[in-house]
Figure 1 (cartoon, helix red, strand yellow):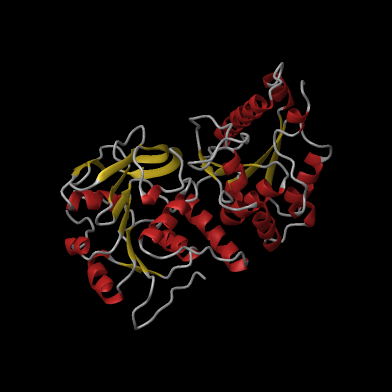
Figure 2 (cartoon, rainbow, N blue to C red):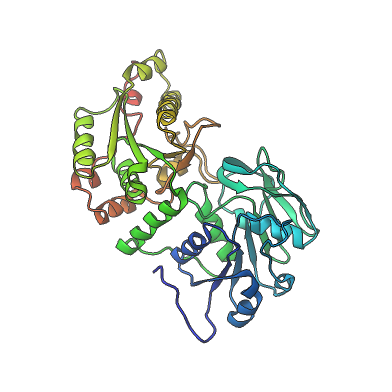
Length: 410
């Protein structure tokens, strides 16, 4: 599934990724392969020749560490914009598009690295199925200050006025953030949308050991050598998320089980047995019962309880993360959680999940949600592939708010 298909004749539905030196250029290509398309990664100086020869359905400009103002910065023949093939620029790719097409690009004095919130200002086929605001991952120096003629600005962040642009007529799109990394929400959706713009239908690959290894590789490539903590509840979702990340970054992951005093009897003992003994993961048990009961005192409304519990969870995690210098929080969020917490444009809020609707607007670390686009049955299947015991994979769902929502007053 992850291999490149090579042919001497025209390859249908090929996407060409131009590598401008990004650490995630091959992660971009893997994402596209996971959506069922053939990918070829090329160097900028060879790009136009390869594109003319292969006739791809679409082109992606990767990010990169250079500045478009640097003397030897990588570039591409401007003829590429005249080939009538859809283009998606990412990070440096957006800056290069803005620079070559006579927009206004500002040389950055300070690099921005970390999480941000994208605020959508205009609709576009590229952003179909996303929310008005969602979390993205930034890693850049330069930025586009004014889009080229013919482009519209699709959205911004608190620090970037031009965070996404599009020329719908020429089908040229660009993002300042990285949709290919696991901590950008709706990243897969955006890449799927681009494939549809290219005239090809994204087809998600079947869950199997090869797919699972690719998912682990994605996490490893996205997180690098950074430390992460995982919100481990003992349920199937957080357990599978924890094991995926553990296989990716090993000792750089620390799992925290927050004993809120609101869970089922024996929950803590089961968690300790399955993970600490069977998988040799770092698991720390945090006794936070008093904090949760204090936060829930005199609160009776279930929705308010969920939000209070979510806020308390994040507060505990932020405190523990600072002790070990973690930059990422791993959560077992799955797609039904997102839907029920108004995760799509036209949906209504059913109920807020403590790991979706209860999160504060600003946190000290970025979220990693490797299961965000999966349904419960798919998560159980992943657990089976990973060799998890049935005591976890077939566990009856028991959400974090647990008994607190089921008891009118605590």
